[in-house]
Length: 181
Image (cartoon, rainbow, N blue to C red; front, top):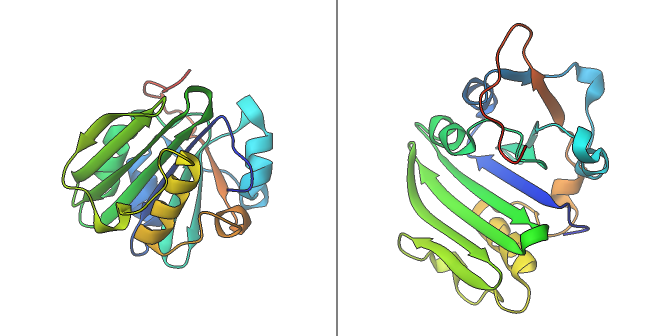
């Protein structure tokens, strides 16, 4: 990846899933169209960053740099009903990295590594995990796994160039529990 935010969660959903993803993250809704930005400027917002949604090569992408999406696990399950999706997590402060493979609202594979050790390793390992340098470069290994699973360029420029629409609290809606806040 070009540079590492302190935290980064990416949820990639197959097929055109924008409407389903937005329904899953309610009470968040897209900001006005003129608020669109790319990943670098989103990260640069620091604690003022908001989750954002975009599309890349047929995938719908949710990016969250602050764990600000309420109840992320529930969002993943709701957003993947009737489709497949992948969740990828980078957390620099704790040297933690993880991923999940989801289909039709169910988790097929979940792995989370912190401080060089696997803390969660559920489900059968995927062929795409083979040969990745988890011990030498866990951040790069996760970016490569994300690219192998989705076909998207998450290791280099691809994810950094897509237009992202920040999400904001919908008027009159109460927010659920915020993660990491």
